[in-house]
Length: 430
Image (tube, rainbow, N blue to C red):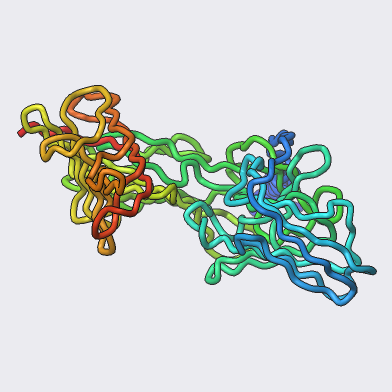
């Protein structure tokens, strides 16, 4: 027999066993740690007020045969199958003010609240009108407000990105909202050249690894799986695969859940950049959260007509000729030719009829809106109400707002509406 120390291959074999055992133990501990960490997202459930009514209610009597009911705006549809009700019941849906901290779009009150259906009722939400606020369809879902005021995220039974609809099956009624469970913040922003912007990945509920994407499989108590909604926390590193930038500028990584974007120092015209986060998810596929960043070379303009949705578009800048200032947009971006003119620095300016005075003008392919209208009483054009407010002029930039009441439009400016907006644009002295 040879002494053990004279057998080097035995030493290597023994060391290999020890190393493999050690690695196995470490590997098991690491896997256990990951699994135990699945619920360690620090989300404190947030009690929220009950939303006030914000539109007309629609009601319908539905009995054992079942039936459907849609909200007054047509965005949410309730489908009650046959056998869900024992007797004829008045079912109602009404829009309410959004109180879900992560909510998007319109919330709805479905009543009666104390009802329990014998078969699952389908709720289908048309989110196509708020698609720009959706972070990722697979993490978009329904939430309802519990009796304690805390919203509970329950996800979706089915998501159709092409149709822009989301469906959930429930056995009860409450106040319901659409929400992004996780998203990048900001989803969209307008920056000046050289400006920095932190983009953060946030999550609004606790989660298990298997429940990151809809549909949910478990968690929480109540009629269906779900998680309480609270103030957002940084998305844990285990869910983050990589950050990427498409467009000008650069990313400076701050930590796993956020990055710092640096806009280019100068741009000839307005341009866009997109920061994307690729998720590490429990099932196969590519899942991207996006933040759209607009770099305004010469500034931006926001405009709303008749109280409608605000449209944001680039500015050509503010041209100063003597004591007169002109703000316009390039190549009719924003849907039409925009012009705002005023006659001084910081201050408020009322509209007038002078060719060299204070004016609002927005011309589309269909019509032209102006800060004047035809008044049938004097049978003459008169200035619109409202004003241009210049709030700041510094470092070659001009900031302001504008409102136009009784803005004239149509061939003879006899029709009236409203216009409002704000702007920030680079100043060019001619």
